[in-house]
Each structure stands twice: as structure tokens, then as C-alpha cells.
Length: 103
Image (cartoon, rainbow, N blue to C red):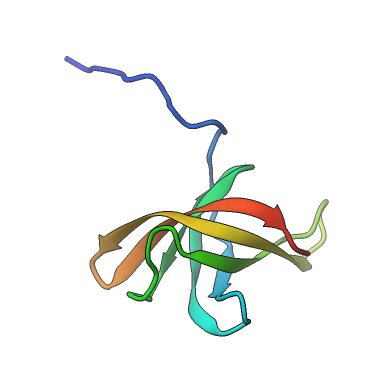
């Protein structure tokens, strides 16, 4: 028997493995990793950083494909709040909520 629960997320999540860099508000490096999924309101980032904690405000820089068929990538930067943290073996998974786009 399968029980399906109502989806509580506000936005649809898409599987996407984009390079991500996390820094603090002063530009100090915190972690480097990859997204596992992304939505219009946030992302789940896998990183090798035990210092990341829920409610911490970070800056996330994502390297995403350029529009169209271009092989180039563009960098987008968001101020984010770490909504949750999950230990995944050697890695840490953090759910980040996009607060505002910086660049």
C-alpha cells in the first residue's frame, strides 16, 4: 500500500547539478559544492562543510548554463538563509531559501 502525502513545497523543484560556492556576508569562503535540486525559491546544496548551520545567512553563487544552446555559463548570486541542514556521510546537505538576488 502506498500513501501519498500532499506536497507542501511552494515551488516545483527540478533536479540540477550546478556548481555552487557559499560565502558569508563579508565574502569569506565557507564551502564549495553542487546543487542537487533547485526551484524559484531555493536550492538543496551538497557541500563539504560542517560549519553551515540552520538560520545562518550566506551568499550562494551558482554557475548555471547560459540561455539557448551556448556552451557558456553565467554566474548568479543570491543572499540566502539556510533553512535546514542534513548530514550525508562526508557531505552536508543544506536547503537554502533565496532571500534576494544580488547579481
